[in-house]
Amino acid sequence: MTDGTPVPYSCAHCSGPAFATQSIAGRRLHWDVHHPCPAGPVLECGRDETPADVRRALLADEGTHRLQLSGGTNRLAAMRVLRTWGIPLNGLTADVTGTATEMRLLALLMADAGVTASVQGQGAGSGPADADGP
Ligand SMILES: [Zn+2]
Image (tube, rainbow, N blue to C red; front, top):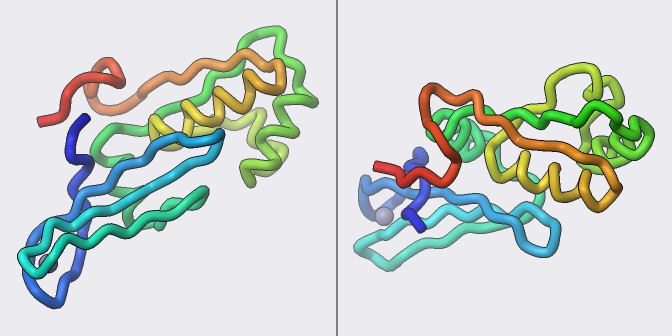
């Protein structure tokens, strides 16, 4: 595992960076930001909704990923999953995009609902999702 994606962070004690990661636990999205501060490490974390600036940094780092529904999709089941995710119903006709972790979770939830979906990266040449970062 890597240290995560560098994210903007303002600290009262130093000007050091912070690093963000997203993960899936119990079918929910978890995020955390850790700041290795000389004054003591700082860890912020939460569930479901990643803070916008953190999410932006993740998207910039790993590229936008897209959820691809399979051909014979049960549209009703797929729409139900998207709705619990807060995506409007017309999300089914538009591209559903997000970070790699978000789309992996969404694909898991789709599979739970009997919908086959895959995740496609469309980042700038980031290659396979499990490639090591810099
Ligand atoms: Zn600090």
